[in-house]
Image (cartoon, rainbow, N blue to C red; front, side, top):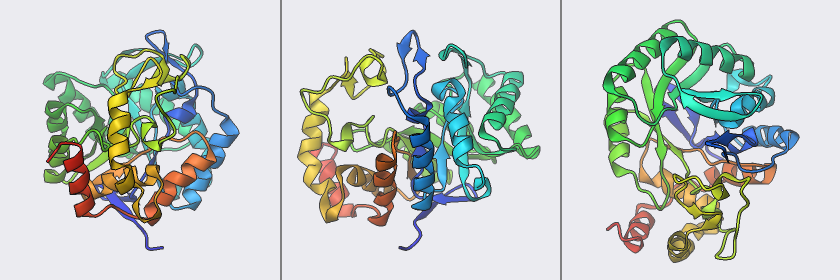
Length: 326
């Protein structure tokens, strides 16, 4: 199979990464579950290694995922191959590793350095390839101080590049033109086209790193109108910001949209998951989807999407037409 790669600044990565939110296990935000239910640590580690064996070289995590636990697992899983992979992590959220509670944010230079030190320890590494601000919005003056601190960390060799995890255009623009900014992480899937933020990435030669490429699992096709996820799952916990599920049930509008484009997504022998990822690659040359996973089977299905590559422009146009975007 021909190698399918993309770039984050000057860093070459597999065209797809794996998002490591789910493997962090259970943690809490605003008193509600913010994880994806129970996960098994050994299975998570095996899944990361299997993905690597199938060509995945990019892994995206955050210090808040599992209140540090996702980074710990990723560090264990990548031991011995650290120099062959690219790690993105995020900072800015305050959390308690004992109670697994996430509460509040801090973007001060002192806290950034403290957070980085802790992430390096958990990941068992002396540098992070891509360090992302994990606070949705900041005033311009505060964002500039963050960027200046990150520039210092690049100079010190503690990080290779940085970016911002946000869907807000004004925030993305604050970082986009800076020399060491290499990526914006944002939502993108067949339901959410994100054209404006992709334009910012393309015009500034930034990687567009795509969270929720499977719409929190809805695009796997395994949910229906009778699905009811429990409260210990972020999708059933009652968070207002969860777009595709309400009180643990997938929203009917998204089930209907998926049904209308299912045939296109599963063309050429792809699974629904693989078709949803193929859509993202076809949207632009800078896009890098980072689907989540909880077991080896899911990691394998994600990774094997690279064997099919992107959908055609004709298929993309057809999907956009069916979903009312053209």
